[in-house]
Length: 315
Image (cartoon, rainbow, N blue to C red):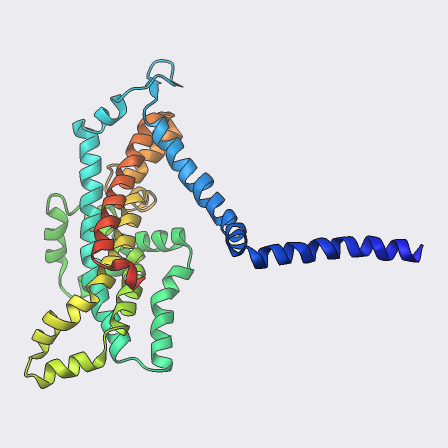
């Protein structure tokens, strides 16, 4: 009995040893076993869903029966060229570009100070300050901004006490920028977008600036370059991949967001809210899929450009 139990116990041990020997002699098999889970995730879950989405964008939606048939058509992509849908795309892309530019202009000085002047606990404090908004609930932050931007909000209170009510009224009266209040204006929506995605711009720029050797800046100064020349010819080109890396986040996240356009700003659909409306409310999944293909194509082209600019080295 004891000998049988010993033999049974030796079987898995022997199999384990032979498997270990096989993996040792065949490192490619070992590498394949490690790669199978991420490849399945990326290939089946991610790419599979993308191709399924692409396929559905060619299906036909019957407006009368509100059903989707598998008859292939290009009508959904032709519908993107309709003026109303074109306005949605133009409005979304314009907002994404403006938020990206604003985030880079605001984020660069903060990142520069963090990389060049902060040391020890002060750098840690800045990291926490930059990342702290990312730890809070996204919905809570957006709702908080609706209170801040409202007519009775903190921002209007400050503007009134600074005597800038006339300036604010002029901004709110500007077509394409204003609204009844900041909370219902394009300007308010732009402010919320910039605030929400700003940390995603600061951190890549800060990482890129950390890699710039201090000796290059000292050599530039020793050769007689003024600070602005050193910034323009040395620092900015070396930190630019970080700006591009940050812009990947700010541009793509703004492009696909559908919560902020619903809670802040005037009426008018954005790309994300259009997809949500088409798929969730109307059930026109083919047209929603066609709208979804637009940011995928834009981001794909943008990533190719970012790769050529060395942005991935700053991630």
